[in-house]
Length: 109
Image (cartoon, rainbow, N blue to C red; front, side, top):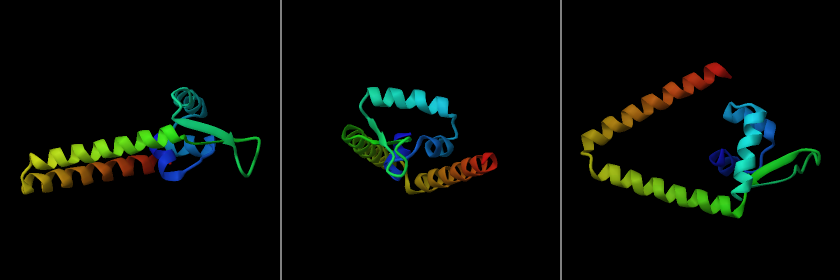
């Protein structure tokens, strides 16, 4: 959810729930937790004041930046313990998994 907001900026709940493949009720519960943690903020939508748009807060943006740095460090560590051949196999398997997930998601749209 945080990554969706990081990539897309402010979003309406209807768009977020569709992109995440979850119900509006599930989304509302998750957003409540993220708001309590001060990772997201909600404001009136620029186009429709009756609707709340959700965006990352400054604290949420900082959290996502730290997470990206940690992922990068982890990727470097994994690469350092693999041979070039193992890295190629790992990359191939990751791409295969991604294609499978994309196909699965596409079938549910």
